[in-house]
Length: 449
Image 1 (cartoon, rainbow, N blue to C red):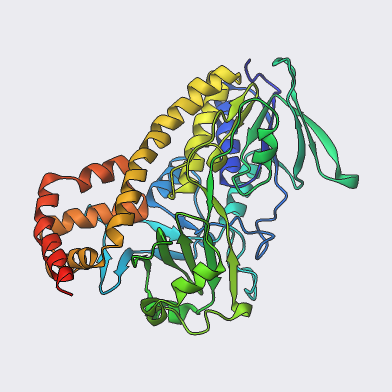
Image 2 (cartoon, rainbow, N blue to C red; image 1 turned 180 degrees about the horizontal axis):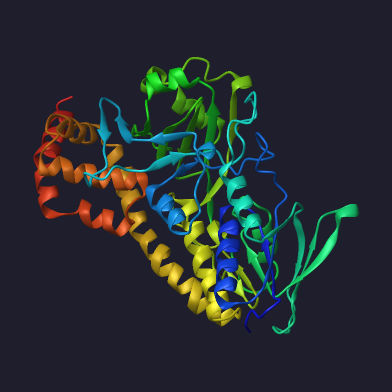
């Protein structure tokens, strides 16, 4: 089964994964000298404030992703960028230390964005939404957008027959038949559970509920407190796996990820920590000037996210655990589009050309990520050990050991390296041996308390 001249492609979801697939599909069609119809179904308006436009994300674009966009001639306009990030700060209970790009003289490129047009309390549209920009890009190169949700999918028993979609409601209700359907709906949609019922073997990823809160400190306060830095916290709290303050111009995004589902009680517990109270602007708890959501993120990959003429990409298919969701959307969209146009659109084609390579790139790397996260959970609760390491880095900034730890920590918080590379660097014998005296000292000190 191949995509021929005049083939129709339906993409369910207009976020990054869907827009990236449209981009790659239209590029492939152009190279092959064929015409295809690409239609994206997306009910959200990404140019609106608050929940109607937000795609619920921390909104940090890594250097790796920005480079990939440039290679595809997708140039992010300045109006999309809330703030350019120069570095990170790691904050533990007693100390904080700046993390810097470990490969001079090159300077890093990291940008913070909104996935909609800003928080619900913003006085005006604060930016071009990143997702809106990508969707407009897809339209500019030939994709059509239907602003209605897909409410039913009919997969025929005969693989040579087309898939039929039903979309919209009432007067807007319609049907669409497609040679290929691309599921780019994400784990926060109801669609994964519906596809699970269709019997072709798809099982959605397991998820954990995170917490994202936007507040309004003003740019002056943000600059004074954080500058152009993202603050990452390791406070030894059992329910927190990752926490960050992400400045976005006038606004501040606070992101919390735990091993289990987050809720408002855990958010308040984190925010009331003494170190956090010293770092957070006054009025953060003003309900009129904050916007809170609890989006799901995947903690593993889906099972069998493909069948004849249908493939599921992005985080409802497979993505990097806890990191770089947009980058994973780019990778899976590229693999799936390449498979569809080069190999074909059968179940076997997507298994061999899309999912197996995706598991090699992302799935296997997530195994190393799991080891790193488990080790971090254990180490972060040993506050004396963590503090001794950070103190050593602060007092000996130019040593090989500090540079090695900086590289590990930088790549961990930014996602600029694979989990495998981070893991191998972190267990370097010289690095482990050099840290041993600090660990023994901290444990001895703890035993005397």
